[in-house]
Image 1 (cartoon, rainbow, N blue to C red):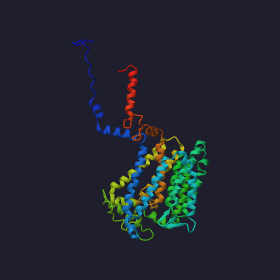
Image 2: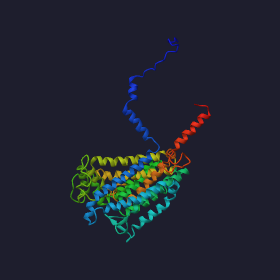
Image 3: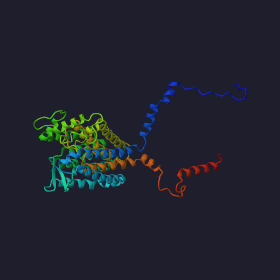
Image 4: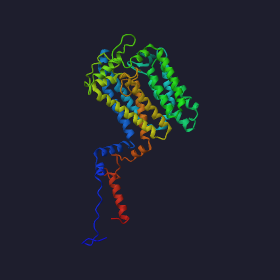
Length: 451
């Protein structure tokens, strides 16, 4: 190779890359997508989605309960903030339950499965005792606690079925018994039918549908064969058709699917139609908080089952899409927790809780949109009702505990350095630990002869 005038070898110029690859590398949209994908795949993504999404739903739900329940409270000669104060008290108690559940170890959750199931069955049986149980809107599913406080034991039956069913299927999987269909069905299906029977004695078919969805979710996670799954689904479908055909009220609700005008007769569809009116008058950004017209006596159950309609009227399409996005994020995070774990109990419990919340949200929102019959179930974490809020927040605490217990998430949390309470021996009261680490590395480098 010939040298230059200075006697040095000529400098080799770098080969220029094509303009297409350079533009692809410098594309801001691609760079943004890469960063978002990298942030989405972090170990703590599910943890933040569950915690942040559930808290946002609860806070927005409190705001909408206050807005949607004022007129109803005044019509009952009560203070305008009556229902909001009760919901806020339930949210505070639920926050304690959420925190406790998120800090409990998995073994303790499994140990509580049988006591919670026994307590739920006992309370659901008490509902049918004359003088103890009470009827609300035609359903005998409530127990009076004195004053204006009531409790619906069937809501705790959902949590009991999730915990007990997850513990049962996990123990059978550890013993490799789920390959036999009798071990997959017994005693899960009989106990589920016991809970369903106690609920249907009170006439609450909406809650029974949610329990059936949880049962199918557990069977699907356990890897039930298609024939077995289809058989149980067929039996549940036949029973559902019989229960609907034998009840004029349920037939009237079924006839109101897609109704746009009130009718005469048994199926007047008043609630379904005015729910559509509320959504239609909301527009893109709504009429503003507190400015709903339908809640002034036109829309029944505006702060409970049809609070999504009031949300659409006051916050518009933007508000309803935000609620849907929060529930979608919560469902995705639950599926991610169930799919990333190696513990069978965590997988079944996380899948059961996710099935419970998403199925109930779909049934409630579908009824408000006129796509499904009105089942009388509240929107999880959003509608008014302490009996529904408390077990749901405990279930959210379960998901948070499971998300924190993932190996990658546990390692990411362990790598975090505490910002407060540092020891004085590690760099003084204000000196960060990173400085000591850098000095230690520098001393090692000098001892090895490096400069």
